[in-house]
Each structure stands twice: as structure tokens, then as C-alpha cells.
Image (cartoon, rainbow, N blue to C red; front, side, top):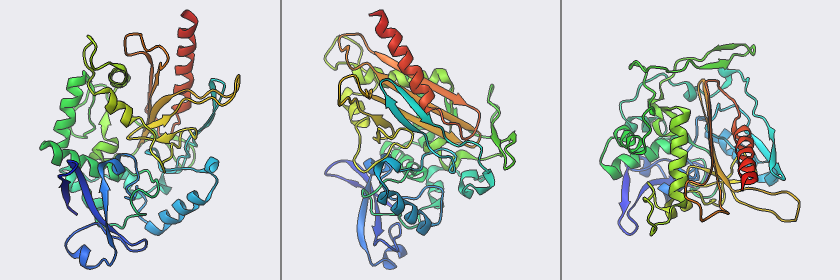
Length: 367
């Protein structure tokens, strides 16, 4: 595998090969074994999970059958894979007026049945080393044609960040966390003594609460390798909300990101799925639900963005509900909710959404 930079758009790209049946990742002997056409995976495809790179499941034919089955089902019954416990069923939310009912994720699964790669104990020296896990595997589908949540795609993205920035990925991220004031967000490494590190729990095959097994997250820093706190995540959410709402030519301080950048990041991408809320779609690293109301006094869909997270022994959600109606108010204007649980396979998005809607309702009553 190798990377190249497209000088026309200054966007790093990954070069792969695909023939619909036997595809390989690129370069050297891989190309000589491949009779298919070259395909390109851009960073946009990586962040939107449209790359075709597999998730933890290694059986490509099994994944293709599952993806093919999903694509043939009615849209309302589609289920996608998210970065949660791999056997955990995702949340399905139906918004009626302002309240959503949760089809709660099944949390007590037999961990022994989950993909082996979810429980990796090996330590990887760099994000480049971590690419060895999947770089010679076939693509599941032609890039851009279908959606498949992939933590490995984000590992590749972290390698792109290293190449683009010229810095080690963890160093680059630590500087960003420092700039945003996230003092307690750090890589989850085994060796260092980390004060107040939580204990992690899960259920065994007898549905009994147990300590989660040891894992090493150096294989997936970008896709689920950091420890954080609710205060840090709230700050992160407010940094993004401020950036989204700040006017570039106003007297206010500029946001950490440009408003157009956040708008692009939160814009729904075609051919994607937001499994924890079927009313939405995936954007660039976020699930996005757009505001919608077809009939008076009927279902009212609020605009919000969120992402759930799951790892061995932990679950989380960060949800941002912007106030898009009061444009004259000083940002950040809206509600940010985050929940972290040291329990594996816990669906949290609907709880966060209900909390956000209650705060919005109380705020509206005061106006």
C-alpha cells in the first residue's frame, strides 16, 4: 500500500484495486496479481465510511453477503455496523413531535462470539504498523458505492494525518486537545499510571457482570483509542458548536474551525447510514439528522448531530443540538450532551437526545 498526493486538489488519496470479487490493496506484487481496474479512496470516503475497507470481521464474503442483504432491504429496516461492541444491535429512533422512542441496543452479548480483532492485545509501535492488520485484505465493495462502518478506515485516516502534518499522529492529536483546553483527554496506554482511570465492565455468556478483558488500543488510536471525561467532551462539543455559529467577519473571536468547515463536516453524505437514528445519515465523522416537519402539529424532526462510541468495557455518546432559529444570540447557542459509561454495549444516543430536548424545551419556556 502507498499514498500519493493529488496536486490538483491537495488531498491525500489511497490507491487500491477492485474487481468485485478479488481485490487487493495496492502496489508491488499486489498489482501483478490483480486484473481489475485501479480505484481511488479519498479522505472524504474514509471519514464517511464509504471506502470499502473492512471493519473487524475478516471474512470478506460474509461481509459482502451482509452488505448485499442490507442494500436489498427496505430503507426502514437497514441496520449498519457502528463502532460499538460488534454484536451490539444499534439504536433505532422514531421522532414523534419532540420525543423519540428507543429501540435499545442489546447489551448483554457473549463476548466470545465477537470478532477476534476487537480484543487485540498486541502493541503497535505506530499507526503505520497498525495498517498491517488489513492492508493486504480485499475491499468489500467499490469505494463510494456502499456504506460500511470501519474502524480500520480511520486507522488509515490517521496515517494520512501523519503524512499531511509531518508529525506523529498522537503528538498531533495531543496538541489539538491542548489547544481546545481538553486537559484530560489522552491515549489509553497500558503502562502509564493514569489517575482516576475507570474500571471497565461487560457481561459474560451467562449474563453476569465481569471485568472486561485487557486490550491494547494502539491498533486504532483514531477509531477508539483515547480516554476522556464528560467535561472534556462537553468542551469539545461547545468548541464545534461555537465554530459552527461564529460569524467570520464579526467582532467575536473566531472559532477553532471555520463555520463552512463545520457545516461541511455535518452535511449528510449520500449512500450512508446513521444506525443509531434512522431519521439521519452519516456525514464526515458524525451522524446528522436534518430538521424536517411535513405537516402541521405532526412529527417534528429537530436538527442535531451526534456520534456514539463503544469499546471493550465502555460506551459513550456526544450529541450537539444547535439552536438554528436564534441567529442573533451569542454562540455557542444550543445544547451539548455527553454521556460516558464504563459498561460495554450500552445504547446512549436516545437518552442524550431526550436530555437535549428537555433542556431546549426549558430554554424556550424562558424566552
